[in-house]
Image (cartoon, rainbow, N blue to C red; front, side, top):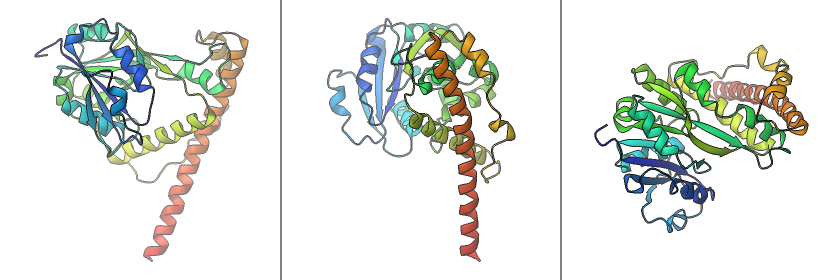
Length: 302
């Protein structure tokens, strides 16, 4: 790093009032404030974002309405000046030592730092089934790093040199471009490490509709990435294992430290079953729609 202590915090936002709490957390960092710049990338919000930033004249505003959040992140990177790029999201709450711990990991030799994401519910003892599911399963950064050197941008830090070498996020991907980017960086020999002490907090999704929307984005994004990488353009059917009951949920419910009390464990079991079959339904629905669309296109062309 040419200037190892200069950090640019990158935050994309679209219609999220939680941005204010995120910025408050960023401005409470133990890292020297004069070495931190914050770049907020407005990804086409329907209500003005600038008024939310009036409390912090040091925050740089970037407007990128085209594409999704990864296009906004790319625009923020171009507008930033730090030798370190620290990515988080507008619904996240970085802990006070977040930047200090992440920069220390970079200075120790990492090229990319996947920080820990602590998921929290509105009431840990009485979570919605979707909240309980996410308390256990959402954002397993240590697993991502161990299995493929990947990280999510809810909590990812890297050097500008590493980012420039790997290239920008693929803006055509609306989901999963952070995983793709970090794996691409790894394929170039850049080293990703998991840092359990660089922590951001992230709220669990609170409803079945929210989880269903996430599943549709993730499954669609996975197929889009496969197509861009030269894979088949036809949306695949879900594999048979997608319909197998999640019997391992009972073991996870007993052992997961995130589940506080019997009510939370019961909610988790419901959430596991819902996630399993909602994912299978979304995958099936996308495959059916794709085949109907192709059949209709074939009829029009004949």
